[in-house]
Image (cartoon, rainbow, N blue to C red; front, side, top):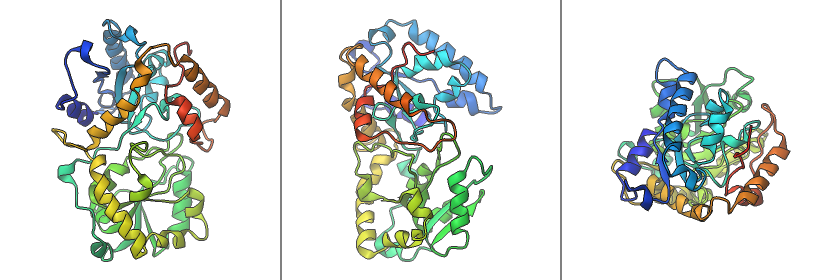
Length: 355
């Protein structure tokens, strides 16, 4: 949250005159209020209430019913953590647009991420701290073809990770390690591909993407639930590898991973990743074509929804109907919206009369 808000504040895109601004950034810093020791969800809620009382007291919120207000969230549940304590506060904030690292559809919590409306951003990877992307020759010298380290307990919340550990714990192709390690950064840097997999239920969020980007390791996405950052702008299929969870856990999983390691395929991924990785990293002050520029481009794609605050009421109700009819409970397998459903939901999910 601090990085994105500071980057916007230091950029050429910001103005201190609200009358000139198409979007209004609300620097809520919610995550710190919740997670800075001691952890206190209610403290975050009280802070959010105070911020919203101030924002709604200004003359700008009602101009577009809050739709042109931007909130930045960096936690696993994003803004939905406050919905678990006070639904009315969340519903007011949900009228705006979220910049957030949560990029998995949450069964039972559909409003946490409105695909096609909210802007999914990468976890923080600063350009100045990043290792170079490996060359083809360097990739051949890496110790691990594919690598992952993380938590798998409690098992009930880490279903996919438990299955992955059971499947690959003795593999020489896919190296799976559990728990934390002081060598984690070196392990990432010593791998050709680093796995990006779901976290615990229900949000399935993982903060590892920033670490992977920073390490220079190539990204292997094995996550049916996720929509990758800036996916409407960047050709993820060109600069990363991807397998479905079923493919990866199946009998041919290792063979499918090895297919990414052919000289032609590996070389293409490396060349494209060198071209696009800067789009996923942050700078202070911001630089041309970095992650902030992608945020600005994403906002411009959504400007038509700001012309009239009632213009897209039909689409928002339709989006709510689409999502609500899925009736996905807390433990259900996630279902990413189809392309057609995303097109409907790019104008938001109707929450104005939600209870």
